[in-house]
Length: 118
Figure 1 (tube, rainbow, N blue to C red):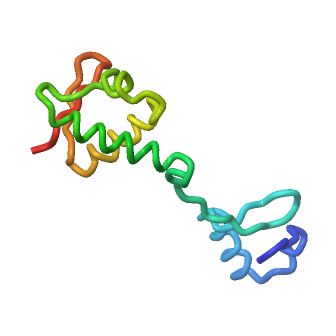
Figure 2 (figure 1 turned 60 degrees about the horizontal axis):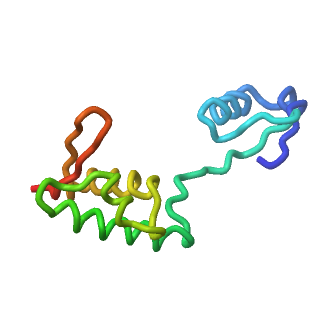
């Protein structure tokens, strides 16, 4: 239903009005500037090609250093990273690795330490 004018609603049957209302309430259609427009689904973008090498470098270092005695912190990763990755990359990779069970996290206040999962 592209550019469906809101004034046309009065000419619709009762069933068509109900179907239209269901589409609006479910988020399939949006009302804008007196018309109805389909909502384009938007999902998570994920890493772009530009940052993918940074993410991979961070992932490799985090896994390697998490296997060391005592694990690794974000500060330790940043200290050895140079310009290869940034803090937000560490958070993203740590979140992914935690979800997959590759690493485990322990916290002391706000400071997180990651070790390889068992």
